[in-house]
Length: 312
Image (cartoon, rainbow, N blue to C red; front, side):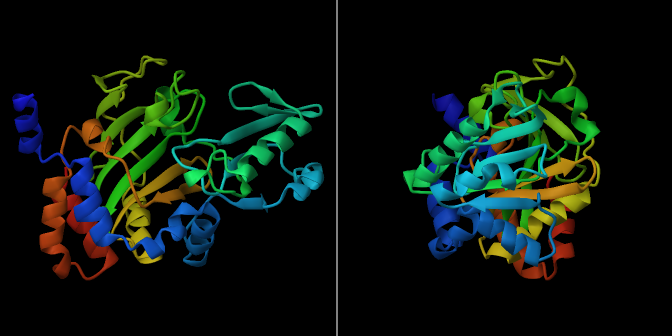
């Protein structure tokens, strides 16, 4: 245990308590949390700022609205239903097409209109929301992932998580769905986390179920060495989340759509720490280096350039 603790200290691993006290509490005003905890608010903020986000088709806030569900879905063969205040990827239902009067989910399951209405009722009751509070359901554009991920994903859409500190991207990973995660890009549900070099946008080591791996368990393809296209654009999009929300320590989740390019999926005021395992590197040295330099970084371009020059 002592050797393990010493190893963690050597790489500057950021622990939960230190993250909560020195970075989240110190740099994130609680009054700003609703801007990222509510996905509808985040979308509206991003849209007004000119950032690309998955299109919002409609929201349902009260049970009575589900009576018009078929009319609301008339023009949409594929879409995503999710809770506005959900967390950890819970409660997300991806519909990839229709089969007569039924809706086909990305995992092949079929849902009737009544079953979709029941799902929405559960969302409204707060089953998937932060703290179990009543929520609203949102229906949005279904992202079609870039072909660059074709050999290292299973069913679902990979997303790129970038930790942004004081507007500087400091660490990144791509979360890759697996059979075990049922196509969801969620590490706790069995997705892969592959570290990404901030400097080059190339995937590094990968972690799956807390073990270092080299290949995707379902496809057999190597996970490392993949170059993410348009990497500077992704870093810039993530860095803009600082001005967008005023939050100093944040996780930006970005997807690469094959037709629309990088899109901001959501923001997280309490980003997890597994990103360090995926990169086999600690956050602390990067955070301290950013704290020392932030006064000299006057523009968005400066912040992104600093990140690429200093964080491999």
